[in-house]
Image (cartoon, rainbow, N blue to C red; front, side):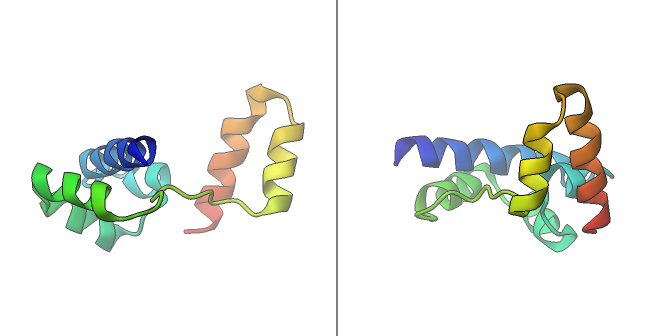
Length: 90
């Protein structure tokens, strides 16, 4: 459980840091209103959320077909492919 808490904490900190940037939604996958709320939260509130959520807050944004396609392509194309999918979902 410590590993999940640590992942959650790091993810929430990054999301909080990116909340006011143009890339925040694309890089985190979180809606603008969630990012805005995270930007307002204190470090203690972030830590509490990371600790008490009970599950990993990070999730894959791709369906099985998209993920399998990305895994089968050369690594040099993966970031562009992932960004194109992410942009289409917004």
